[in-house]
Image (cartoon, rainbow, N blue to C red; front, side, top):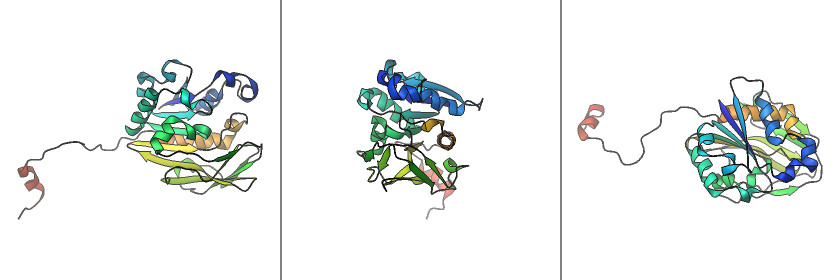
Length: 245
């Protein structure tokens, strides 16, 4: 299984508060989630690389793409966005984390503004597992807390999810659909809300478990694929299957 962890990793993230929490970058903290499984190959890509780190060769070798972005969504090339979305339609799984709800690929796959309420006040969040039978929730407790997290609140302008796995509650009373899934074409999509860059969210063992499970769930399967487009079936072939009057 091949995973690519994408992080905008703007130069401003390489110093200041973010660097204090994630000295090697968010992408490497996420990469370490999979380090104990020798059957998973993980590579990292960043926005400042040529083709935003996602040329055809990288995407062709990617089973699941994990995407983290925040303030520099517009720096992602439209050609890269098209490339990513086409790979999802063909079966690549993709996980969008935290502020990636504003990313170009997520918006294109959703077809909505993907806007929401937000507040960064250092308050805590309690998450509830409201779909405990879902594979992404395997081994995750019924409820768990994050001491600090940026508040994301409803209304979240996305299409009705296929499944809601986690629900978040914040100290201000807001609630949020914190873990939701979609399918587009042959690809599986998971959006997961926790992950603000100045809090150590990706070191939390429960968060790590959820991201690990999500990657397993989103990995491509190999279902029978129908032939699409213009087709012709001679009448005599149909007679073998049906009794025509």
